[in-house]
Length: 129
Image (cartoon, rainbow, N blue to C red; front, top):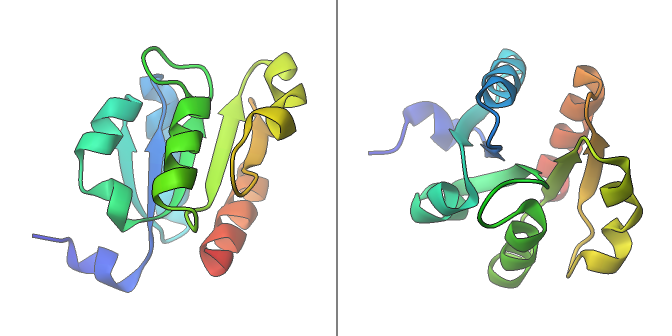
């Protein structure tokens, strides 16, 4: 059964293998009034019903198993309208974003990032998406 709050808001799905990052992003996004679902891997996210329910996806690039690039490519094929925000702590990854992405270009945040800036980007993605 869907959470009644989620019927009034778009769900922001967050995928990151770092538990502290997941908790921090969940707190930040919920404090701004977003419904949030967190996942520790791309496979856990894809196995849930959140892939279809998400209004925005925030994903770390460097994860074991399917990485953020792979998840972004899959999302762009299955749900081209889904806005994707990629995060990375590796500056070199950011240099290749245009050449590696398929479909709509995702937003990119380098860790550590500014919380208010991420919230503005999420809001913008939800309006566009």
